[in-house]
Length: 86
Length: 497
Image 1: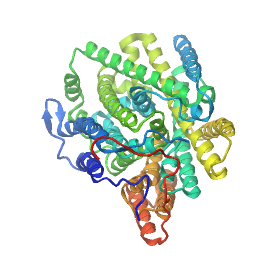
Image 2: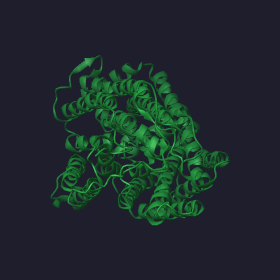
Image 3: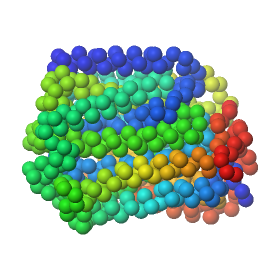
Image 4: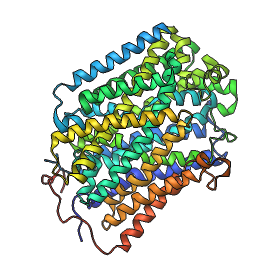
């Protein structure tokens, strides 16, 4: 049975959400596991920055980038209901 | 101390002044619970303000000052958490919600039981978070301004309550926006002063810290007790909890369109990222300018480091201004929490669950105000008796409960067609029950005799909640979905069809 309202039916919308969140979650969880439980990222990367610190800064850059990608694409794909009326 | 007292009183006057000005034109239930509309950028400032509590302004700086890079790990999940808020929640919540998250969920599952369960869970989450904020705030204010703990508690609680009662969401939003601007300005000023003082670049600052304190200044310290499983679990709680914290969600309802909600979330990602990276560098500055020994001596977790640093760099007046800002941060965050709870009590629990959607709006405003008074008193009394609780744990636990109860329901409602009422109720119930059970049997409550070895159970409770939702949904034959979307204007499709 088709669900009304909340359920996201549009495939493009689902693909966009997956594209913006999926890889970010995987990269993030892997990097936090590596930082917390191994010493693989402890070595120097750039100047005083360790690979762990570089990856940590990268998380912020990635979030900003993916946020822009989502906002720029979402307006053309996502269903809009301007306001709930009463 | 006299300068700080003057600044403290001035901070209260300014905050209340802003609240009074903002409350003009804010009338009725709508004005009280969601305000009268704010720009995307303004709302982005307010969302940033809701998250940027003293934990980041003081705790992050202290953590980096004392532990180097490892002190930065607790905020590592924040950018991804805000990305989840933007991508998963922002659009649908603004499109289908009016006052609370319950409105959005009701378009798929119009059940008073689910609204009640979500409402009560939201109250529990907000109350736990609020107690943590109260305890931390009163402790800080008593140290910074020389008050007794209970006087600090009374002053903070009283100011916040007046602020919220004056203009509800409109006042809270105005205060939150002002606070974020001041917070960012102060962070930039402190960082620039640090760079001028040390005559170093941001990378040079980290290099100097590494030379002075060893490689662990810029790399993880695996010997620290804060590393390992609990850090990982707390980070996971942050990522998924941000999209489910009631005081953050209600912010998305203060703008008029879904596009504005998305843009304001994007603004929050930008501001939050810049702010946290700056505060990390300020932490390195504190370790070099103030010294690790002096930071550790002033407060065990280094929470006085920011004010100490401001004192060294800009003298007593600048330190007093930063201390005043700390008070503004506290008041604004508490006001946001209180407004979110007012919405839950008056709209969800009183208006929809008890009043079956037919409650008088004026009476709902009264219920919201009375609820704010009662909840402030309850939180303050609990904070009075919980002075020695672990603040970092309390905040993290609230995020963990939100991630284990509300987040699965929101995500599955949006992306699983078969997800139904039974699944939603079981997700909330299982997430809440297991969060509490693992807390009780964990080291925080049971101490050395704990059966469950970890302090932060989110890594277990989130999958448990999802599993309960899946099992209950496939096991329940009755489809409880609504046949129609009530009270929503027709869809306007943007762009390609």
